[in-house]
Amino acid sequence: MNFISVLSCLSMLLAAAASQDPKPCVAPPLMSGSFTVMFGNGLVTSIGTISFDAFGQKVRVRNYGTVGNETFALDQLMIFSEKVYYEIDWSKFSCEKKALDTTFTPMHVPKDAKLMGQAFLGSSSSWGMGVLVNTWHGDLPQNGKYSTVFTEVGCIPLTYTAYTPAFGWTTVSTYNWVLGNTNPMDYIPPFFCAKSKLEETETPDTMFTALESLAMKTKKEE
Image (cartoon, rainbow, N blue to C red; front, side, top):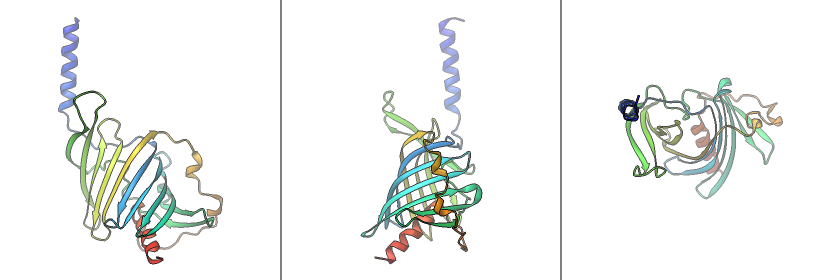
Protein backbone atom coordinates (compact mmCIF):
# COMPACT_ATOMS: atom_id res chain seq x y z
CA MET A 1 0.00 0.00 0.00
CA ASN A 2 1.52 3.33 -1.04
CA PHE A 3 1.64 6.54 0.97
CA ILE A 4 -1.35 8.09 -0.84
CA SER A 5 -3.50 5.06 -0.05
CA VAL A 6 -2.53 5.23 3.64
CA LEU A 7 -3.52 8.91 3.79
CA SER A 8 -6.79 8.13 2.04
CA CYS A 9 -7.66 5.40 4.55
CA LEU A 10 -6.70 7.66 7.46
CA SER A 11 -8.90 10.45 6.11
CA MET A 12 -11.85 8.06 5.83
CA LEU A 13 -11.36 6.89 9.42
CA LEU A 14 -11.17 10.45 10.73
CA ALA A 15 -14.27 11.44 8.76
CA ALA A 16 -16.18 8.46 10.15
CA ALA A 17 -15.14 9.33 13.70
CA ALA A 18 -16.07 12.98 13.23
CA SER A 19 -19.52 12.04 11.92
CA GLN A 20 -20.43 10.20 15.12
CA ASP A 21 -22.47 12.07 17.69
CA PRO A 22 -20.87 12.50 21.13
CA LYS A 23 -22.05 9.91 23.64
CA PRO A 24 -22.55 10.25 27.42
CA CYS A 25 -19.30 9.34 29.10
CA VAL A 26 -17.76 8.53 32.46
CA ALA A 27 -14.83 10.48 33.92
CA PRO A 28 -11.58 8.64 34.75
CA PRO A 29 -12.06 6.54 37.90
CA LEU A 30 -9.33 8.20 39.98
CA MET A 31 -9.01 11.98 39.89
CA SER A 32 -7.97 14.93 42.05
CA GLY A 33 -8.62 18.58 41.33
CA SER A 34 -9.93 21.96 42.45
CA PHE A 35 -13.26 23.70 42.09
CA THR A 36 -15.31 26.81 42.74
CA VAL A 37 -18.99 26.77 43.70
CA MET A 38 -21.71 29.40 43.78
CA PHE A 39 -25.14 28.44 45.08
CA GLY A 40 -28.12 29.70 47.05
CA ASN A 41 -28.78 32.19 44.21
CA GLY A 42 -25.39 33.77 44.78
CA LEU A 43 -25.64 33.85 48.57
CA VAL A 44 -22.82 31.36 49.05
CA THR A 45 -19.47 31.06 47.28
CA SER A 46 -16.87 28.42 47.94
CA ILE A 47 -13.54 27.12 46.67
CA GLY A 48 -11.98 23.80 47.47
CA THR A 49 -10.35 20.56 46.45
CA ILE A 50 -11.84 17.22 45.54
CA SER A 51 -10.53 13.64 45.39
CA PHE A 52 -12.63 11.10 43.53
CA ASP A 53 -12.43 7.30 43.67
CA ALA A 54 -14.96 5.57 41.42
CA PHE A 55 -13.64 2.11 42.33
CA GLY A 56 -14.44 2.56 46.00
CA GLN A 57 -17.35 4.95 45.30
CA LYS A 58 -15.86 7.60 47.59
CA VAL A 59 -15.36 11.36 47.31
CA ARG A 60 -13.46 13.71 49.61
CA VAL A 61 -14.41 17.39 49.35
CA ARG A 62 -12.77 20.23 51.25
CA ASN A 63 -14.50 23.63 51.04
CA TYR A 64 -13.57 27.12 52.14
CA GLY A 65 -16.26 29.69 51.50
CA THR A 66 -18.30 32.71 52.47
CA VAL A 67 -21.95 33.29 53.20
CA GLY A 68 -22.77 36.96 53.63
CA ASN A 69 -19.96 38.38 55.78
CA GLU A 70 -19.18 35.05 57.42
CA THR A 71 -16.65 32.42 56.38
CA PHE A 72 -16.84 28.67 56.79
CA ALA A 73 -14.69 25.58 56.26
CA LEU A 74 -16.13 22.18 55.51
CA ASP A 75 -14.46 18.81 55.11
CA GLN A 76 -16.71 16.08 53.75
CA LEU A 77 -16.03 12.41 53.13
CA MET A 78 -18.77 10.86 51.00
CA ILE A 79 -19.03 7.08 50.82
CA PHE A 80 -21.61 6.40 48.13
CA SER A 81 -21.51 2.63 48.50
CA GLU A 82 -22.67 3.00 52.12
CA LYS A 83 -25.00 5.96 51.39
CA VAL A 84 -23.43 8.04 54.17
CA TYR A 85 -21.13 11.00 54.47
CA TYR A 86 -19.05 12.46 57.26
CA GLU A 87 -18.96 16.18 58.00
CA ILE A 88 -15.63 16.76 59.73
CA ASP A 89 -14.70 19.73 61.92
CA TRP A 90 -10.98 19.62 62.59
CA SER A 91 -11.05 22.67 64.87
CA LYS A 92 -13.23 20.77 67.33
CA PHE A 93 -12.20 17.21 66.40
CA SER A 94 -15.88 16.49 65.86
CA CYS A 95 -17.65 14.46 63.22
CA GLU A 96 -21.27 14.19 62.07
CA LYS A 97 -22.49 11.16 60.14
CA LYS A 98 -25.40 11.80 57.76
CA ALA A 99 -27.42 10.05 55.07
CA LEU A 100 -26.27 10.57 51.48
CA ASP A 101 -28.45 10.64 48.38
CA THR A 102 -26.70 8.75 45.58
CA THR A 103 -29.20 9.37 42.77
CA PHE A 104 -26.82 11.72 40.93
CA THR A 105 -23.12 12.41 40.94
CA PRO A 106 -21.58 15.11 38.72
CA MET A 107 -18.52 13.02 37.77
CA HIS A 108 -20.22 11.48 34.75
CA VAL A 109 -22.66 12.38 32.02
CA PRO A 110 -25.95 10.63 32.86
CA LYS A 111 -27.12 8.13 30.25
CA ASP A 112 -30.37 10.03 29.76
CA ALA A 113 -28.61 13.39 29.23
CA LYS A 114 -29.32 15.21 25.99
CA LEU A 115 -26.59 16.81 23.91
CA MET A 116 -26.93 20.59 23.78
CA GLY A 117 -23.94 21.20 21.55
CA GLN A 118 -20.22 20.91 20.90
CA ALA A 119 -17.71 23.77 20.89
CA PHE A 120 -14.08 24.72 21.32
CA LEU A 121 -13.03 26.50 24.50
CA GLY A 122 -10.43 28.89 23.20
CA SER A 123 -9.50 28.53 19.53
CA SER A 124 -9.31 25.69 17.02
CA SER A 125 -6.90 27.61 14.79
CA SER A 126 -3.82 25.79 16.04
CA TRP A 127 -2.84 22.88 18.25
CA GLY A 128 -2.85 23.76 21.97
CA MET A 129 -5.05 26.85 21.61
CA GLY A 130 -8.31 25.22 22.63
CA VAL A 131 -10.12 22.13 23.86
CA LEU A 132 -13.16 20.45 22.33
CA VAL A 133 -16.06 20.13 24.79
CA ASN A 134 -19.59 18.76 24.86
CA THR A 135 -22.47 20.44 26.70
CA TRP A 136 -25.24 18.21 28.06
CA HIS A 137 -28.54 18.93 29.79
CA GLY A 138 -31.29 17.04 31.56
CA ASP A 139 -33.82 16.91 34.36
CA LEU A 140 -33.33 16.66 38.12
CA PRO A 141 -35.81 15.49 40.77
CA GLN A 142 -38.35 18.01 42.09
CA ASN A 143 -38.72 19.85 38.75
CA GLY A 144 -35.03 20.68 38.51
CA LYS A 145 -32.84 21.18 35.46
CA TYR A 146 -29.09 20.88 34.89
CA SER A 147 -26.43 21.41 32.24
CA THR A 148 -22.88 20.14 32.36
CA VAL A 149 -19.75 20.47 30.22
CA PHE A 150 -17.22 17.66 29.71
CA THR A 151 -14.21 17.48 27.42
CA GLU A 152 -14.64 15.38 24.30
CA VAL A 153 -11.24 13.73 24.86
CA GLY A 154 -10.85 12.14 28.28
CA CYS A 155 -14.36 13.01 29.58
CA ILE A 156 -12.96 15.54 32.06
CA PRO A 157 -15.68 17.54 33.92
CA LEU A 158 -15.44 21.31 33.55
CA THR A 159 -18.69 22.96 34.66
CA TYR A 160 -22.01 21.96 36.20
CA THR A 161 -25.03 24.26 36.48
CA ALA A 162 -28.31 23.25 38.10
CA TYR A 163 -31.60 24.83 39.11
CA THR A 164 -34.23 23.53 41.51
CA PRO A 165 -37.17 25.51 42.90
CA ALA A 166 -36.08 24.61 46.44
CA PHE A 167 -32.43 25.72 46.21
CA GLY A 168 -32.24 28.03 43.21
CA TRP A 169 -29.10 28.09 41.07
CA THR A 170 -25.91 26.10 41.68
CA THR A 171 -22.80 26.57 39.52
CA VAL A 172 -19.64 24.47 39.83
CA SER A 173 -16.43 25.06 37.87
CA THR A 174 -13.53 22.60 38.08
CA TYR A 175 -9.89 22.93 37.08
CA ASN A 176 -6.35 21.60 37.69
CA TRP A 177 -7.47 17.99 37.32
CA VAL A 178 -4.84 15.27 37.56
CA LEU A 179 -5.41 11.56 37.06
CA GLY A 180 -4.94 9.42 40.14
CA ASN A 181 -5.03 9.96 43.90
CA THR A 182 -1.93 10.60 45.98
CA ASN A 183 -3.31 10.04 49.49
CA PRO A 184 -5.33 6.88 50.25
CA MET A 185 -6.10 8.29 53.72
CA ASP A 186 -8.45 10.77 52.04
CA TYR A 187 -11.07 8.02 51.92
CA ILE A 188 -10.81 6.81 55.51
CA PRO A 189 -12.84 8.60 58.23
CA PRO A 190 -10.68 10.20 60.97
CA PHE A 191 -10.41 8.23 64.18
CA PHE A 192 -12.79 10.55 66.06
CA CYS A 193 -15.60 9.67 63.60
CA ALA A 194 -15.75 6.08 64.89
CA LYS A 195 -18.35 6.90 67.56
CA SER A 196 -20.55 9.03 65.27
CA LYS A 197 -24.11 7.78 64.88
CA LEU A 198 -26.14 8.25 61.72
CA GLU A 199 -28.43 11.26 62.00
CA GLU A 200 -32.02 10.58 60.98
CA THR A 201 -33.34 12.89 58.27
CA GLU A 202 -36.42 12.83 56.06
CA THR A 203 -34.40 13.42 52.88
CA PRO A 204 -30.78 12.30 52.38
CA ASP A 205 -28.32 15.03 51.42
CA THR A 206 -26.44 15.46 48.18
CA MET A 207 -23.07 17.20 47.91
CA PHE A 208 -24.87 20.45 47.10
CA THR A 209 -27.65 20.29 49.70
CA ALA A 210 -25.02 19.50 52.34
CA LEU A 211 -23.22 22.72 51.43
CA GLU A 212 -26.51 24.59 51.37
CA SER A 213 -27.41 23.31 54.84
CA LEU A 214 -24.07 24.40 56.27
CA ALA A 215 -24.40 27.81 54.62
CA MET A 216 -27.87 28.36 56.06
CA LYS A 217 -26.60 27.36 59.51
CA THR A 218 -23.73 29.84 59.19
CA LYS A 219 -26.14 32.53 58.05
CA LYS A 220 -28.36 32.06 61.12
CA GLU A 221 -25.32 32.44 63.39
CA GLU A 222 -24.34 35.86 61.97
